[in-house]
Structures are given as structure tokens and as C-alpha cells.
Length: 565
Image 1: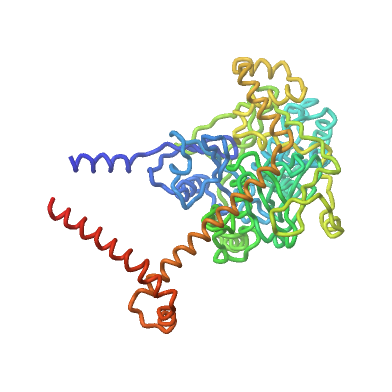
Image 2 (image 1 turned 90 degrees about the vertical axis):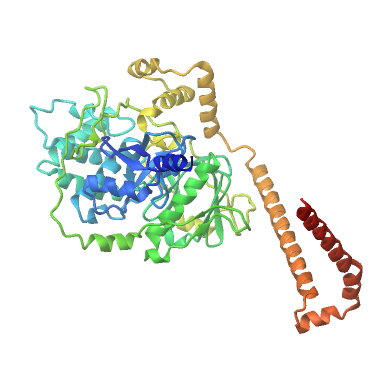
């Protein structure tokens, strides 16, 4: 029986799991891993497949059963992190955007970053002025279809490609004009490099937005960039704090705190899990961009109270070490296989970019995505900035902006339209799963759906009950954070009670220790003085000695009972 159990246990430990990772060009890489395989093993497999050496900028993202996004931790087991049934599905994405993408050593790395930023542009995460948007789209056209050719590119050809959540005829004409007249002769690599240089100058470059609310209930997007912490509301950047000015990041429940010297920014995430994910992203980004060496990384706690809070430690290299390591790369540049863009209107599916070279374990697929428009974000007002407190406490004060804050945090208009990234307000990063919610959100906001979209979603339209439930969730996300102040009061009271209980427990343990040491034969002047006091003698003869005899009697009776049996 023992051998049978051991053989069964060994078989369960040796079980293999199928993993599918969606790459930046929407192809898929499939492999098998052992049950105890760490995240680093899977990531190394993927980077070897991509022929990627400058891999510290990238990561693997997945969605848990509760629809919360996470970055795969390389020091932990893949199976334990995913908590879902195999086969596992994940996404390969840029995790840390290079501060200067044009300075990357290898073209393959720049190409992958190009694909990521192109996805950001398509999903509304990279927002910019109309003139900048036209230039970026023209660079994408030049990189993927080459020079303008009247025989191949008829009038209105740029309208067949989807670069942004929504287009206008004027913008499409501007894109075609720049592509025809200004970019002729540029190679794909040159166009991609120019694209990266232009994207780097935008206010929302490197933004992976986290939807939150400020204490006034106004919608906001929090993000961490190569240069610091950013808060976006409407079409404005209302806060920008450099990494060397951020002193602490903390979260409690749904509440996220960012400490900058003597002021605090406070925001509320949709769920405690989303808030913890936001905090961990902040810890990792601050360590990657701010520190000089990875040896300076320290374990961070989410709270200062005893036995409370999460602990987390960034496990990778920092940006300076990555740049130094990249400078030492000496190899022949790997071959990059690019494919042209697929027009979005001539085919029911579109791809976000070129495809990488294929290997036996890679299967290709085009992601079926209808042309989506971002959710309409709430119009920001003069009161849309978060409340800031003047001390490091958790007290919420009326909103008062100091002259220093006004001078250092000027509101910057980042685009002609409100910032509303499509995938960031939805639970999953996979665009094809978000179509139903996108269509439902338009109906809630009063927007109309196109005939094509209604036909595509007709077969999978939610029932009335499901639609009402989903609509309630979306409305709750777009409304104020009701009862937030009461929740904070309750959390503060619980924290105080927890601290009192811990203090009383420690005092009780210290008292017992003092009694034991005093009653012992330890010959120390301090204990001799205590033993000579009348109070101690009274305690010794009236309480301690009878209690000791009682315990001794009970122990003897238990021992004799055991011997008799």
C-alpha cells in the first residue's frame, strides 16, 4: 500500500501542464511544464523561442478566476499562481517600458516594444493629439506595407486599417497624406525606430492604467511610467510625481496610498485584489527605475501594524543594470520576420501587428476583434483631483491645493479626447472576450452600435438578468465610491483594536516571564530585590505556592492514570 501511495504521489508530481502564451503579434506559443515549474522557467522558454536577450523589460500576464489581472512572479510556481484549470493561457507583454526605446541594443527588442506600443495605441492606452496620432499611424503603415504605391493603394486605403479605438475621415486623410509625402524610402526598421522616438515624447507613453476613484468619487486612471507616478482624469494629466520624490506606497483593502514627502495621495480601487495588484506594480516599477543596483532591493510591507499586511519583494534586475548588460551583447542580429497589416474592413478579423518566426510549437491565429470604441469616461471638473492630507496619517481633509503643488503639478492636457482605455476598465486583457461588455457599455452610455456589431454579438447577447447585473457593475464603476469614508473609519477602528490586543498579549507574556524568572534560583541583584519585598512574599505564599502544588497534584494524577491503563 505504501509503495502504491508513493507511486501515485510521484505521478502527480511529474504531471505535465499545457501552457499557451499569446505573443505581441497575436500568435501563440504552446509548451508543457511540470507541476513545480517556476515562472522563470516558462519565461526563459519563451525568450529562447523569441531569440530575445534584452528580456528584463518584458513579463507574462495572466487573469485569475476572479477576472483580476496579474504579472507572473518568476520565483513562484506557475500552477500555484494561476489557480485555474489547465490548459493555462497567458499573455507576453512589455512590463517595464524603456525610458529611451531608441537606445535598445537589438532590433528584435525594439520591434517587440514597437508591437506593444502599437497595441497601446489601438486600445486607447496611448493617447495623443490628432497631429501626433496621424504621424504614428503613418509610421505603422510605412513599416508594414512599405512605400505608397498608387497601383496597390487606392483612394481611402488608410481607412481600411484600424489604428485607434475610433477614427475620423479627416484623420484618415491626414494619415494617408503623411504616408505618401513624408515617409517614402524608409525601411521597416527605420519607421519603427521613428515611431518609438515619437511615442516616447507623449505624456501617456508607458502607461498601463489602473482604473480607480479619488475620495470625491471621480474616475481616475493611475499608472507607473519610466519617469514616475501619473494620474489621468478626463483628457488631462492631473498629477505627475517623479520616482525620487515617492517615499512610500501602501494599501489597505481597496484603498491605495502614495506618500510624497509630507503629503499623501489617496485612491480607491474597485476590489482589494485590484488594489494589491496596483501596489505590487508600483513597488516593482519604483525598484526598477529608481534603484542603482538590484542589491538595494528590500522587502516591502503594505502596512506598519503588527501581523498585518502583505509583504512583497521585487526579484529582477534594475534598469541601470539592464542597460549595462545590453551594452555587452555581441552577436549577429537575429532575423525578424515581418508580415503586412491586414485591413480591418476587408476581413472580419484584424491583427495588431506582424508575426514572428514560427517554430513547431507555435500556432498562429488572428484575434477576432470588432472595431471597438473606448468607454466614455466621466467629464472631469475643477474638483476632480484627489484629496491630499497634510500629514502621514489616514485622516481625510477637505481638498486644499498648496502653492507648491500648483507649481509642481501643473495640469497637462494630453489629448483632444477623454482618456478611456478600453481594456483597462474591463476585467480581462484579452480583447476578444471584452466585446460583449464593450457593446453593453455603449448602450448604458446611450451610444449606438453599428449593424455589423449587432449581428456579430446577436448569438452571444446576454440575457436580461445578465445584462442588468453587468450594467449594474459598470454603473457602479462609473459612479462615486459610496460609503468610502465609513469604510475608512471602520478600518481605522479595527486597526486600533488589533494593536491593543497585540499589546495586551505581549504584556501578559512578559508578566509570565517575569514571574518565572523571579521564582527561579537565578541569582541576580534585580530579582533579589524583588524577592525581598513584602508584596512578593505575599504573592509567593498565597498564590504561587498553592497554584504550583495544584498543578503538581494534577500532573501526578494524570501520570498514575496513564500507568494504570
